[in-house]
Image (cartoon, rainbow, N blue to C red; front, side, top):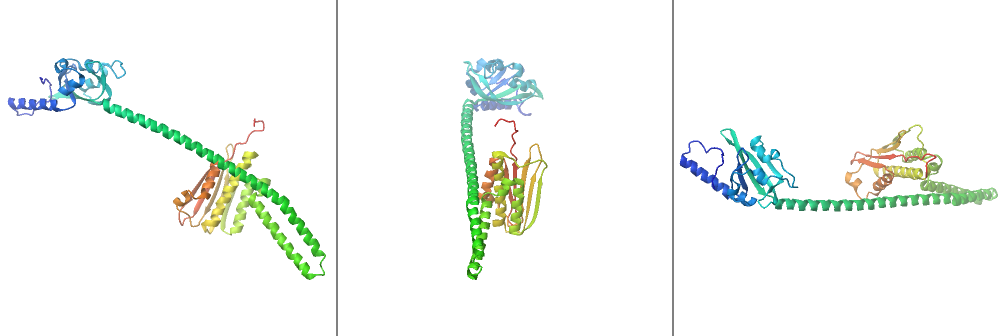
Length: 404
């Protein structure tokens, strides 16, 4: 094969024999590589091509020399559309001095078939002037096929993950709906039991108290019986107080009679009086914002109240605090949001304990809030106290003329 490439001149000082030896070594190098290599002149015509390149293209060496390489092997894109010579990155290497490395195109064989190729084109300089370009290329069909298989596998995996995620999300939503339903049933049952206790047991205790008082008045001449009646009266009073406490725990009547804002403030005052902690209580409800009504509003209010009870219960049972700060803030229309915060200076807890799946108190508060679009956040560090915040948007009130 005749090497007609105007490549860089051999090093200065070499004799004619040295130049021939240098050229022979270059020929040997070109023929020994597995990559296709060819050179083009300023017209884009082939000046040399190595054996690997010719075999890859399906041409004999003499059939390629002197032919325009773009028209021969780069004339069309992968989809068959015409590839203008002016856009050819290979030719831009010597026309504009722009080296390139491309792995997203195809080259065409002598039999009209195409193969995915990675090629690079660099200008050839002689005395500082561009004389053409040298191009190296390799067949990357197998690599592209492997990449396509990998892409398909990745897409299939993503689809499976998406489907599995959708299934898990659906299952989680069903679990949350079930949990909310269970809570609703539980609250309804608590209400029923509280009403029955009040109506049945409460009335019986009052009647019994009246009978004991009646009996005590008629045994005035029997001091021992009068003392016994007095003791029975005290026991009945204690029973009445206990029944009242049980009824309040089951369903605070203030929640039904005066609304959520009053019930939350009352619960905070009860906690402060019971624990005797140093305290700071702040309550602010924007003007015109009433507790939500209707069945949805009642369930929302119960959820907020139970979360607040759990906040205070955690302080009483676990915090070992000396002081507590309670803040209730409800901002104004058009989209009011309830903000409830309980902060203590107690022993605190590590993050791992708060995120533990067995932290049922924290989990329960988050689930209750999440069902109504709310959020419970807990900030705590060992020895630095705990701050629990509830953020709950108020449910939208339906207008009177709205269709149910």
